[in-house]
Length: 136
Image (tube, rainbow, N blue to C red; front, side):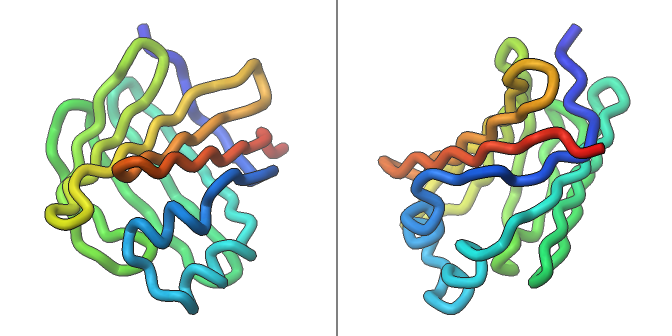
């Protein structure tokens, strides 16, 4: 049985986020806003069904999906992509199919103890780590 990622998660720190956004061809204005944002992510997990809502002072996004089924996703920078989520042990792996020149982008969420979540974002050779703390 996979882990339960449900909860409210608040961004604590980021590594290499601006370079990651640049690799995704996010424009400079949005990169600057994204670098300043401290998102809160609410994950609701019911078995293999997920609802993930992310909110910042700049933008709110929501995505709903089932493990193993391709779904349509609108990215924070308003790009329409196809994605699929899978389990890799206790890690939730979401693969966004962005097409050329970016290719597939991986978002891997994993618990770090009882009150921390690590989101590792990979686009080509650029890796970003986003560290979240569990909210009350």
